Image (cartoon, rainbow, N blue to C red; front, side, top):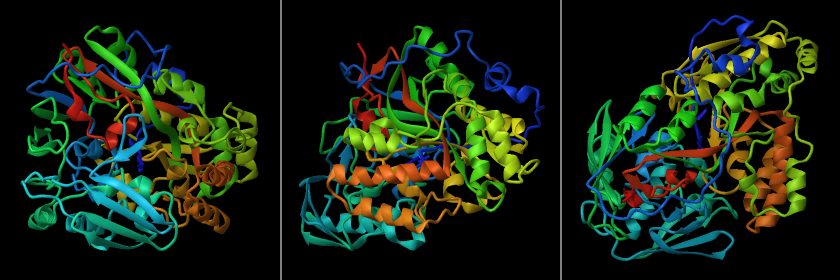
Length: 555
């Protein structure tokens, strides 16, 4: 749920950017050309060509004292209610746990709740594990669960996950270790989201003691395999192993997350051993890291699509012909090669194929057949712009130095616009300010679109498709269609998977026809670890799974 990056979980998953630049039209004719002259220094090895997804990395052979991990930005907070992006969740997933748990195989299993039952279509009962202790030593109770879920719906918290609870009528304690959630109507998505940060359980006493400082100083009052240790602002976050953990204790006594906003610096730190590994590897560094011989570059299922997020439909982008023109003009193949380092596939779908794994063939045909073309058609695109009366109109796309996946997509959009008669300008957003695009409407002022890599927070296409419902958290452009809203409600109410996905296929077609976001590519998760460590999952599960607990000695 997810960045060009969101979501963005989002949740965006999710990165974006803004960078002021003036580039001549001649330079903008090819993403491939731009790859040679912009962004961080590129490795002579070029893009990777033989990308194979792996299910896991070799298990650790023993314990270690510590390991270090690179993240591209410092989390603004670790409060679970606003853990809506990569930096926050990469750290938080190891400290705070949810009622259910997303596995490395992207399935759901029991978490802090040892059992979840659904006695009626509008009732979910969570039976909690006994003997689970918070980091302060106090035992977890049903009262803590009721309080923790309640924080997600408190308007004072402006929770990023509030939409998950839109159909919740009540959350009540029905036993010392039992919580019952009553829904206003059946909701197939709610139980799935209990494996994300939406389902995190924290100590009521600990959260209330921290007050407004919760998430930024002191502990997080959670139950995970690590506790929040020293937070060196602007530099790093240290996690310390929690030896009172209810599950298998972490193999490392400490995990250190280093904030490294510059892609080249992150890569060099991995090559030199300054840091032991990281996710969200700069795409321009794939070949260099693979060939250096100091570690292993892995690719795993990401449930991620790279898109152009439309944030303002009051201007020229309010005309679907302009959106279609941009889609026809973007060089997707060039972007995958240059922007994703060859480790992606061109797509015309907002959702990944993997999100539809449970769908029958007939549903897949409805969802994917006849989607807008992925190839370039400059003549047709230019005609659409002229037909819409948008020739010469100015649009602004945000960009960032987070990585070439962001900067080159923004530049590809600018190149596309230049070729079809639009005046598209770039604005830069610093990597540390990136998350604000997803949480602060003021941060999006003056921006018409930005690169967005959206990751599903659950293995269900509706995670992404519900973003276009009227009033949805990530419906930044304010799209509203009563028929679309009706279909979202129908899909949400359908517990049988095949029935739900039949409806979701119709939603996919509608979103594609309207180009509410412009899909560009599917993108796998990238993970690098040096030869000293192993054990981290290769999939996007690291966003909500306590992955760092499995990292240990490779030898």
